[in-house]
Image (cartoon, rainbow, N blue to C red; front, side, top):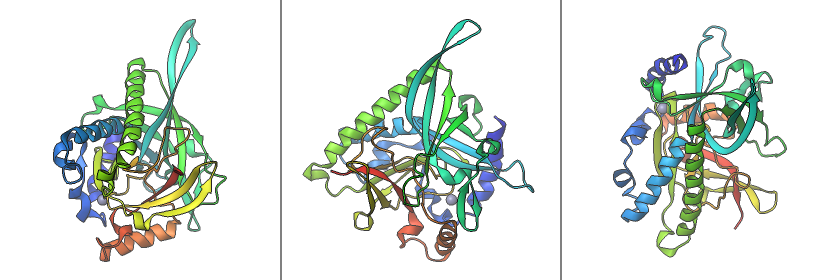
Amino acid sequence: MDHGHEIDERNKNNENNCPKAFLHRKRITWTEFKSKKNLKQYIKNKDEQNLFDRLIKAMGNLTGLLTVKKNNISAPTDRIPGTCFLQGIRRRKTTEKGLKVQYAIFTFTTVYHLFAENVNDRYVVNKNWKTLDPKVVLFYTPNKSKDSRQMKITEMLEADKDYYVKNDWCAITCECYDVKLIADLENDLAEYQSLQQNLYLMSKEPAYQDIKLVIIVGHPHGGEKQVSIGRHFPDLKETLKDVRSGQRWCRYYYDAPTCPGNSGSPVFIFGQPVTGFGYWFGHPHNHAKEASSIKKIMEKCKTKPKKDPECIGMTSIGVEMIV
Ligand SMILES: [Zn+2]
């Protein structure tokens, strides 16, 4: 798959120059992730490790690499990597040349700024975003392009425009005509939603009050899928605004390491009150800040890393249920 190679070539260079390179080794590649080994610091019980194992597997299958062409005349083939997460599947039927065809519309959540340009230090969504040739790839594995499933983006849902909060959330839709893939992903989505609910109930039990686990799956630097595990800091959590009935915008801070390319990643926060798509719009990994402050943070992290939560995992802003 040609666009994969474009990212692969840039990936090495970007990784070497990354201000958060000292955190790279803390992430686990998708193929090397083992719940027993990688979660034991947080979750001791084997059965519970298995629940998280299933959650992370489903989460990973639903996580895609999203790339867009960089609006840069000097390097017209350069692509910017990000991550997207499959949150909804709607089955459809159509007729083509007299034959009935089944397909599905996939809704992925991701971040706006991938489709935006920096204009006077504000991100402005490019109205002609389709000219950026956005592509979603599921099961992206470098050098194994036969496993990858590329999809074309058909629509962008600008769901967050009404809110006063400077947010960075958007949803995109793709069409999928592979009936087996549709069924497999429906299973993953059902599994993810039911485990999310079970784990939320578990988090309310006294034995789990001190577990501040955060799991992020994404494509840092546009490379292989990686799992990032860390803690969130409840004392730093901000509630920005109550919205709709029983929901609020909030911002979480965590130390699970992330890099460029992780934007739009699903963020699982143990103990966060969430439900399925339609109620929960999720916390895709993002910074929800002005372009200038992201630049400042990245500069700061070069010289003053580790202790500052902004320099470690950064933040997510999104919606959760009020309980
Ligand atoms: Zn990095």
